[in-house]
Amino acid sequence: MRKMTAMLAALVAGAGMLGVAEPASAETSRRVIVSGTIHQLDDDIIGRNETCDHLFFDNDIVTSSQQLIYNDGEGCEGEVFTQIIAYADLMSGGAIRYHGQVILREGECGCVSDQARASKEINQIVLPDTNARIDSGYMTWSGGDATSVVLQIYNGNP
Image (cartoon, rainbow, N blue to C red):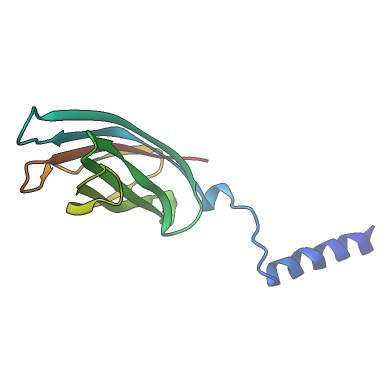
């Protein structure tokens, strides 16, 4: 039995030397739940102005720093696109830093390939087992198109 235990210990130590990662423990990972709204205005010169409202939800287990946890968005009327790029960093004591940017895109398709017209950095530290709020404010482009994003971030145990 001792020989088997010694062999198992050597195998585990060798795996660590080969770069095989051990599963993240509760101390080295956090559950990040983000919900919110994306509001958009497509300002048309001909026709009527269109507004679009979208609900946002994301649920991730964060196990490293600079972990990309969201890169997507919503379109409005085939012309306006709001993109959210968000990262989470693990910090000491179980806190996380939620950061990235909100980008207003406008063009031909109302999609991520449209030209970026305005952007705003987001940056919020969220203590363990608490909520924090991010409000991008109203971002506009000279053509009159606009967007705003409000997010509620929860930092909990995995």
